[in-house]
Amino acid sequence: MNESVAADQGGQTGHADQADQALKAKHRAMWALGDYPAVVTEVVAELGPELVRGCGVQDGDRVLDVAAGSGNAAIPAALLGADVVASDLTPELLDVGRGLAAARGARLDWRVADAEALPFADGEFDRVMSCVGVMFAPHHQPAADELVRVCRPGGTIGLINWTPEGFIGQMFATMRPFAPPPPPGAQPPPMWGDEGHVRALFGDRVTGVEARRRALRVDRFEGPADFREFFKATYGPTIATYRFVSEDADRVAALDSALDELAGRYLDDGTMEWEYLLFTAERAGG
Image (cartoon, rainbow, N blue to C red):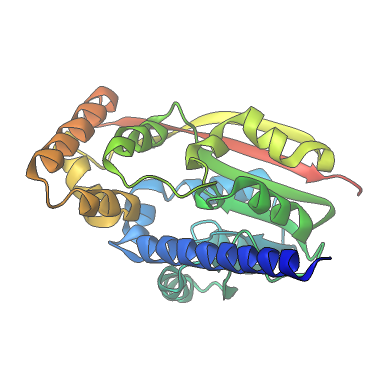
């Protein structure tokens, strides 16, 4: 190879690596904002056990929870007797998870890890799962490739992700005009809630696909403002969006209004339904 070409390619690769590291650092910091574990315990707690059931986790299984956060799925899996590793990009969430696990008598390993470059061996796990977690990895195909790689042939891959059409998917669409532009190559998280998109990511590397749209019943919020203020205080992506427009009072007011209008459309006598996709499949080759 021509030395100048090799040098150019090396420089491009180094720049891409630096850009990716910077992007992941921003993601890590975003999820450390606010109090995401409060969202889990007060709003979406049911999703973790639902995913564990969907994956068929059993005593003795080797289980990896990718983008595990504070352990919404990992801890219930460990309580069933599985050998669980909970991995996440954000150490602060894992720290909370350790405390929650100890309080419930669950024993599991906690590992800081990037969903797009997991530090585990090929085929190391019987069940690989993610509960509204891997969907936030910016590059979908590398994340899907890693889910497949670390699952043994014949093992189960299971995911719960918010759908684009459901409440959380629509919340991201509502915030998008107020948020900073996504970096080149990053894909919208709610695409992971589209069955066709997820099937395409895995291709023929999985079999026995089951994809079911379900709804989480949420009765935490009395009205739109209650929802808005809770998410402004606890949910990293919402906090980051408000910070981006914080110096423009009109933009802040417009975002308040847009989120109130969205929540008002979904609230019915203090109850909301948030649609998600439960996707399970078997890694081919078993």
